[in-house]
View 1: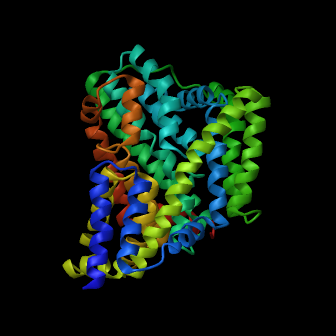
View 2: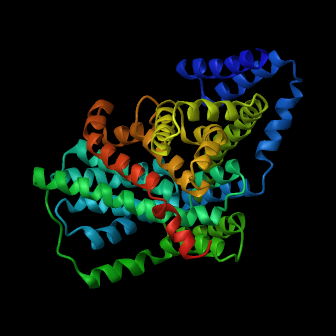
View 3: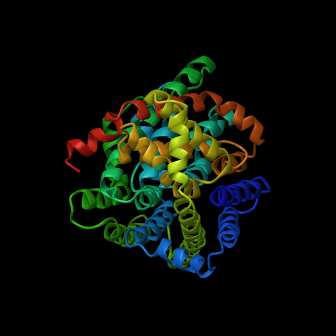
Length: 430
């Protein structure tokens, strides 16, 4: 009875504060404090668990990846990646929509952030698409949905957070596992864009030119090489994720300042200031979620949740759908990092009990959270896209409905066919 009341206080107060629009870190911390106080535990436990939560070597990669993304995102590479994408797919019907999707795949592999992708590429591509005859809401919908590719394509700091939370999951394997699902999402969105483009008679771009493709590839090589440094280094065992991230920051600084010359030294300091702001939010969430996780574990909530969910059905297909449904609902009311930190310890044991590999489940979690970033009321990427395009959120959501379907189809393929997530890591022996 005591444990039941403590669980009710912990989860009840948390969801009440979420509904009252408390900042997520405060909601997590305050609900944990109320639970610990009810149980009579010393409040020094809070400090101990917060320090324990961020005292992790693998988490050191997170600030480096965020810094790398900020440097490359503001270092003048957006236009070069758009030109490369245009050389690849701009010749198709609805070519600029295809360019948007492919550019997001390239840019996501550098920034690792859907919000950065939307703000950076969206500010260039949305006006460009509108000028060429595309509807503004369609252009925005393509931009925000394709930005989620960056969450799957390495190096994604959210993958590092998941690996740390799940325990025993290789960051290198997660990085490899994200490439094919990211490409699958891109193809799905391109098919949806093509159908709409044919229906609305959106324009084609210039004819395909191999010479132009090679030229743009040579120009964009320096940006794309940052991803190779991280992935090849980690998977090949040359260095850890943290070491690769640190090297990538130095490389990004050199490329942005000396090669592309998109940043001067004053700009570098501004970027580092923005990184500190972002990093402080992430680390506070990790620290406070550690207390919340401690309370959940102490009250055996993961075991109780597993028993409750598996008690409803033993059908693996229904359980997979339920896991995705829970993550999608959480994505509508919470941001990405806290969902990974809070839901992973609860849902991962259920996923493993029906044969889902932790790496595959990590891809499922990240994509579910990505869809959540596009859904009201807490869809941060949806808000950014609406602000960049200067359109009402309701209009953007309506235009995004066909693309939600594309993303759900991709999610189901990843959930029921492990080969999409595990094929590349298994092929490369990671």
